[in-house]
Image (cartoon, rainbow, N blue to C red):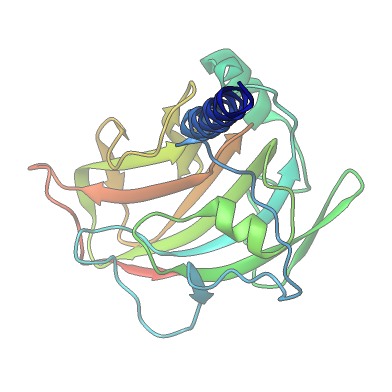
Length: 247
């Protein structure tokens, strides 16, 4: 009788143990694919490498696929948005028409220039992206700046050797954005979107002979932030014969 009781107890303990293991495996399986929040627990200072390098004054043209990779980027402006679904055309036009800093639509920034936005002192950075898409999230994170609920401003100069008519500005961004060429609105990307190359293309534009000014504003609530820009000719082929500078 004692032997039976002992054997039964051992069997019950084994079943209980197996149940715990299976329960633990089930809970673990439910968490597969979940993304842990970014937490920097190291003492190593954050950096924007390997996504950016400092811009130089050496001649630079679009990459092999026509993407523009030299930009002046302004540190992110705090613009809280709980969701990217609010980015309708009307919301964006109001957000982008708001004057955040002096001479916002006419400024010719230089590397290291500072602007004041409310209580924020923000710096312009002349950088060259190592990817075809400019990773704004990594830019902000590397500089220990806000990464969510933000508005980024971008600026660059494209020098064309000749006048080019009937070209299109092709843009992708995460999330919404607006782009201007020589002071005129060229592209608006609204809604909650992911960055896809050539996601939205402008109507037919003209690149002037000489300098052409590109300004962009990218807004995001939660999630990653990035963009890519290039020009396409009448046949839809990337335009590569341009010179890109930041001053």
